Image (cartoon, rainbow, N blue to C red; front, side, top):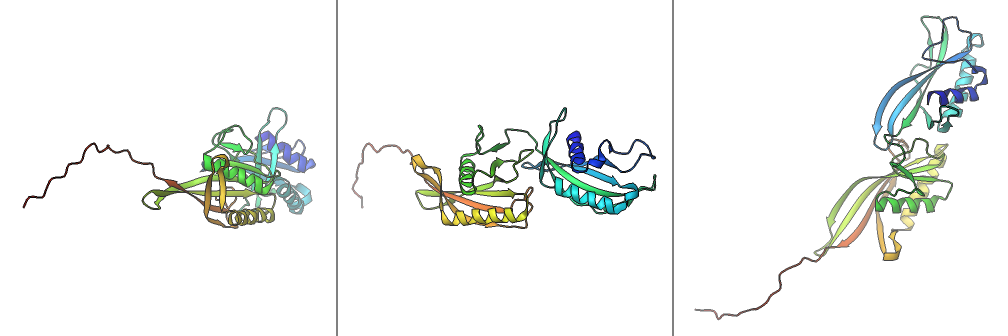
Length: 286
C-alpha cells in the first residue's frame, strides 16, 4: 500500500517526483519541495469495514510558501478522496482512500524550522479478503434473504452499480451498495402461523453525496412501490417490506444510510401425535 500511495501522490503532483520520503526526510537540508508520508494508527472499526489505516502526509513547499502547499493539498484531496488507488510493479495493492480531515492543518517543524501542510487519509482494510465481500455476480452466495436483496438492488439501480453483501471489499466500485443483516426475530401470527423478521442495513457510496442521496431515495421508493420482494419466484416464495427508512447524514462506510425490515409469514409444522386406537365410554356412577 505504501508504494501505491506514493505513486498516486506523484501522479497528482509531478513536482514531488523522487521527493516523497518515509516518516522523515533523509536529512535536515533536504531540498524542497518534498513530502513526507507516514502510516499512523491502524484501528479496528467493524466486521464489515475491517481496520482503518491512517496515512499522514506532510507537504513542504519551501520558497513557494504555504499558499502553494494549500494548492497541492486541494489537488490531493480532489484526486484521492473516495478514489480507487491501484499500485504498479511490486506493490499491486488496490484500495480506496478517504480524506479524514486534520486538527492542525499547518505546523512548524521544530527541528528544521520549516512550515508544512498536513493531510490525513484513511484506508479501510477488510479483515479477510475475497470471500467476506462478494459482488452480486460472485460465485460465493451470502444468506438467502441477503442474496435476494442484493439481486433486487442490482435490478433497481442498474449495472453501473456494484452491490456487495456482508462486508466491504478493499476496493469497492465507485458506485457501490453494501447490504448486511443486523438482526432477526420471530413473532406470533396466530395458532398456526408465525412471522420471521430480519433487519438489514444498507451502505451507499458514490463520488459525491448527491448521487448517494439519489440512490437512497430510489431504493426507499422502490421498497414502497414493490411491497413483496421475490425470494424464490419458481416456488412462489416472497418477503414483504415492513419498514424502510434512510438517514442521509449517516457515515456511508461505517454506519450505513438505509434501515430495512423484511418479513415472511410461515406455517407452523404439524406436530406428530399418537393415533387413537379405541375409545371406551363408561356410564357415570351416582
